[in-house]
Image (tube, rainbow, N blue to C red):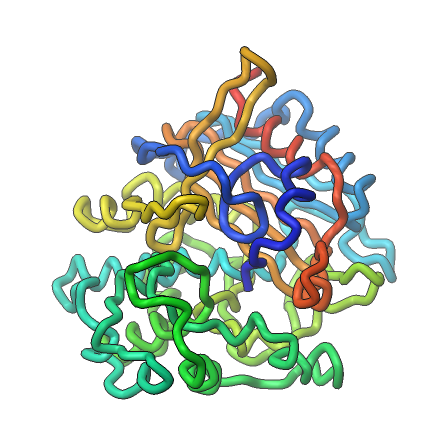
Amino acid sequence: MTARARATALLAGMCVVAVAGIFPASAQERAGAPQGGAGAEGRVTARPAAGLEAALEQTVKDGFPGVVAYARRGERESRLAAGLADRASGERARPGQRFRIASNTKAFVSTVLLQLEGEGRLSLDDSVERWLPGVVRGAGNDGRAVSLRQLLNHTSGIYDPTEEPEFFAPYLERHEWGYVYTPREVIARAVRHAPYFKPGKNVRYSNTNYLLAGLVIEAVTGHGAPSEIRRRILAPLGLKDTSFPLTDPEVHGPHLHGYDLAGRDVTRFSPSYDWTAGAMVSTVDDLARFHRALFGGRLLRPAQQRELLTTVRFRGKPAYGLGVQRGKVTCGSGRKAERVGVWATDGAGPGFMSMALTTADGERQLVFAVNLYDLGAELKDKVPFPLGTGLGEIQKAALCARA
């Protein structure tokens, strides 16, 4: 689940890239499409960029238990970690540990739909009704008026019940960490509410959009959406540490433990409610490999690559493409400040927050994850993670042009 825009003014001091809910969404200048990208061959492990190690240490000082990161400059890559993976045992954070990637999942889903369009099996201009007859109806909702493209770029207007505190009562109040919501249950709950606006008239982030997108994948292919993601993306790219759990509340294998602001371990949490909106588990290396392939044009045909990176523009709102966003990282200060265009995905949910960024020229990458995010605080409109300077410093150190 991606955090919505809460306490944006407070966050502006610690995060310098403008993307969906986790970070301030004011900068919407155009970032061009990356031109190619590093392949799996030829990259070498190198010393981290100046200031990157210190930035990770600062993130821990800011109050996050641990942080893991992958950074690439050209063919030189580095992997770093600081702090703890598990407060109870004292296990140190390591770059190869897994974590819940939350809404980074959405880019995998949009990629599959774009591949299906490239194969001539659907059009993103198809209505939701065509593929899911009767699913989006009632309370002013009309699936005939909503296109698949509007699901992917969040212009559908369809309500998101995961913004309701009562939605998470089974977990946060009754502590039923394995409680299961089915995607159709969440969608049915959504369409009992009037839409936020008429389709195409505005942009508003909604997890319901991507649950519907997952059902469309299944309607078109006859296969489960997670299996299509595995077949089309995970297996070809060798993303061996990436998985798509359906109801299992555990994170298996070497992993970070996730915490809330009170220090409670919330690693055990059913991913069922998030499904194709955010249920996947991965590592910084696997997310980086996916980004290289996606923004390097290796997963989509040229027409679909252009669609992926075509953003919607509404004043004061994030620049959404199809499962990806564009933004700027500010490098330097004063008259010498420069703004580096980036393409980004992000995700936040119980215990974890992560982000993957690729510069517009494809030459630099950053993927990082921290293991503290307080869903309960977010639902009360409070800042759901520690404030500080570390996360912004990580982005500057990895993505700005200095050596």
